[in-house]
Image 1 (tube, helix red, strand yellow):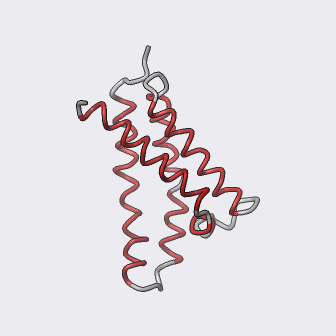
Image 2 (image 1 turned 120 degrees about the horizontal axis):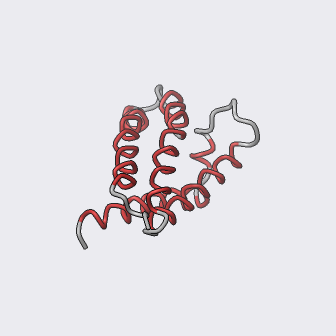
Length: 126
C-alpha cells in the first residue's frame, strides 16, 4: 500500500485509539476540561471520545474522508485549550510530566496539517 493510502488509515487509527481511551480511562481527560464549560467534565470526556471515534470512521472511509479530515483538523484546533490547561496544571509537577504536557502543545500543529493534507488530497470526492 503506497504511503499516501496509509496516511488516512494511520490518522484514523490514532483517532480511534484516543477515542477508546476516553471511555476506558476517562479520569485523566476529565482533568483537562476547562471549568468554564457547562455540564460535567465526564460528559465532555465521553463526548470528545465519541467525536474521535466518529472522525476515525469518517477518515477511514474513502467516501467520507475529505469531509472527516477537515472536521478532524477543526477538532484538533478545538481541543487545543484542553491541552493548554493540562500543561498549565502540570507546570509544577516533576520535569518528565511537565515536559510531556508542554511537549503536546506544538504537536497540535502537525496534527492539524496532517488532517488538512489528507483532505487536500481529494479523497472522498465522488
